[in-house]
Length: 286
Image 1 (spheres, one colour):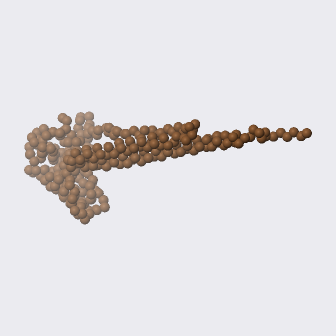
Image 2 (cartoon, helix red, strand yellow):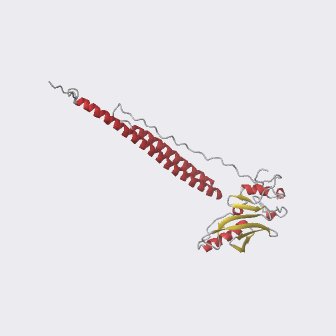
């Protein structure tokens, strides 16, 4: 009698085959859910980064508005704008946190014995502006100012000498030293496509100071007036005319000359005879 060895058909029930297929199905389902979880976590990180970029763009616009507001003495409006942008940033962060919780709830498996653990992306930390090291006036061992000195777009070449015995050479807010000389960049008066360097000086005009400006690309022409704003108004008018547009620019001559810059104020107030200017009120720390 021949004995044939093989699979015992009695133990190969339908339930055994179903259990095996179910285990494979659950393993595959778990991997799919893990993949979905990682994908959604990565998508959340991308969304958070995009929102942060938008928040930084809003912050940039706010700072620009605030700078313009400071120049035109409208600090109140700038503060309002700042508060609105800050509120919008907080709303964006709160919305993101809500989305994280919602995504985690959706990733729970339908079967009680299959749970996918999802690690949410790290919480977004609101960055604070770093404290910049203040710019200091360069001085030698004897305490004298080292020139030339670059302050942003302004280059200080000479500080000049204080004329204290003629009242028109200073005001309550500014001192106009004779010989003061700076350079700065602005739109050209002859080339509508480019900018040029302007040399601004304070000269002795007799009873009053004379403010003169020369452009590097038109050195034969000199713009002069009895006030810094008057001199710069002539430059701006010519620069706009060559560009065929109206002179609608509102400028501050002392600012363009650098007299409103805190570092220039510090250097000018360090000149001899400033304390003898009877109308001037010192603004920097002595």
